[in-house]
Length: 360
Image (cartoon, rainbow, N blue to C red; front, side):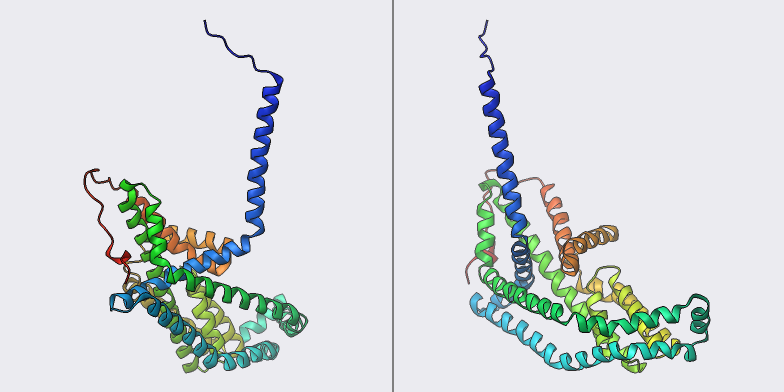
């Protein structure tokens, strides 16, 4: 017959203290993570940017260029592109955006004279008065919030510089980071870990570069249509189309709706508003069935519902940046699950080395 030790109140108290200390440590850890969540988000975005640019760096490395020089060339190319973008469209964009803010009340006032349908809606529902009040309050709101806008600009500039510096470090050290992740796994799982890391890098990089390229095409096509139809504020509207086109599935429709509404207010329903809506809808069909399948051939293999849910969750967490990051992350998770279902090779077979991990 075995002798069982009797549980004393001291034992219960010790267990309670240990459990309380564990809960307190977990709580302190979560509180610390929550306190530095902004920095962690910047680090995550920086890593995402570095992974997005890594395919271009590897392309230069494959063409017999050392990685530090390749990283420098890609960084200078990105900064030059951003500088040219701001220098080329910054002044006219600011001018046209200011005109849009100041001239919008006058365009709404003249809608009664230019559109019988709007005149009937205004008389029945008071739509014109409500739009006039909203448009008249825009300059006042902008004027009263200049300080907060300036503070937001400074905060965004600091965050952008932080992301740029961290992305540079991540991009320069990417091969070493990939090898370290692979070495964390046991010997038998290192080949599988390497394939998973390669899949994540390839998915994120190809998706981001392809999505930015498609967005640029959408903005150029929208600008051409706006100029041909002589719709005012073509540059800011084209920029809106380019930015909203980054949002999967629903972004292009949002940009088309904004262009149609502004064209109807600033110009006329026919042919301006109808023409630009038809122009962008035709482009959307070409983008969905011709441009996207060719640009995104190797980056996404997901059903539309999964893409929509991932983008909505990402947008809810981090806004537009989260929507952009969620799609390749979801595609990577799907590819990783497929990889995990693949049976491992026998233990006596050696793992193959990755030639891309070799130093240049």
